[in-house]
Image (cartoon, rainbow, N blue to C red; front, side, top):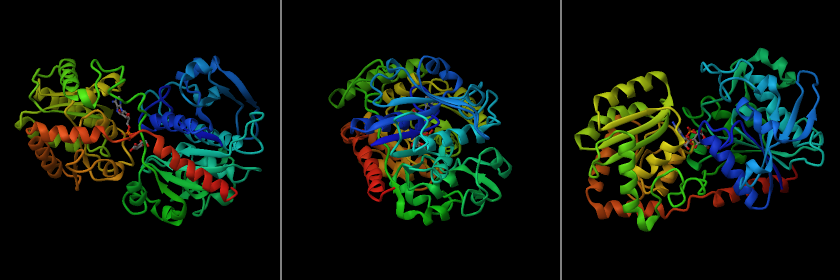
Length: 480
Ligand code: ADP
Ligand code: GLC
């Protein structure tokens, strides 16, 4: 099949979180199944050189509300082993901006976001129709990801010879809401501006557009697929999801075992596998303690966190658990960025516990890998988590995770078998789980069993890629 995977981020080129990783690893796995996969992403400023060195596949003239743009295929040399072709939507007035994919340098949303992602969606839709701007290539499936691509299924529904559309929800908390007045810039027919279309409490919702018009909806874990059909995790769209439940699928994310695998990881100082995990983790733990100015104490149980610092991730709950970690002789390393209030509170907490607690604010790929390899135990008390990737990494790195039973965390960690799972997202419940972990850690044989069962899980993308493939096939069989 010809699959167009449209996304606002794709690692290693652009990554702000899990979506960036999934947008590289799933297309790669689909490519390995024999499909012809193109990943379409905007040519942000950080990709200017990549775009300039690529091959122009299409020159799209300005028309109506839409600006001129080009579809550029990145040079093969930058895509070694990617398993798919990277297509960039080159339109400097919209994408060659200072800042990141969604926000400017001051952390404000780009003022033109509706048009920026409306245009990405429009071009994706055309690529899946008889109006494809790339000669000789027309997608059978347009696979959309989160609100930034939500208008693609809607636009596609009006085009001749159209592909089937799949909308994947990575996080329903982000919906892409814009004033209704933006509709004039987006070439949306009036009838879509109603409650049965894109309208959401007098605003335009890109996410709702995707859900209403997609031929299939998927989300990144079976539990989250159930949770979003109810309050509060439906974030107001639970009714829309229930209306489309006959084509809503929960498919757990996998991990790219070429990148996240302690046996081949080039970011960590000491590589290991299940047979050498004890020595490997001991050496990486020492390296992590040195790197983070913690007491060089092999006995101290070291907890790791890599996370956006937000209420969703339960970063505040971790702060409440620090006294317990200290009381039991443990240590904590946290890496993250996010809410400025939380960042300041965490920095202060680290200052209060020198040698025991280290907080690193920022985005640091190398440290993220070292935490997975060097920590004894990983904390992920997210209030909600559509899938979550770090608990999966933790399993394969022999770093049993402590998680709240929600979304993909509930689907991937088994209490007392591969980690510790607690029911309510409260500090008390997290602390009770921590106590159980400390107890288990003091029994080395029992702790090793936890590690071994976690490391034996197969968490690569092969199984989940086949599930996506079945969703595509079913749509094709239905003649869409
Ligand atoms: P989300 O996408 O909701 O942030 P996920 O668990 O799906 O959560 O994915 C987060 C990804 O981003 C992981 O690969 C994690 O290692 C990475 N990550 C998050 N914060 C940082 C950070 N501060 N530095 C480096 N990597 C980070
Ligand atoms: C979102 C979710 C996260 C998920 C990721 C990739 O960012 O918050 O849980 O793992 O998307 O699907």
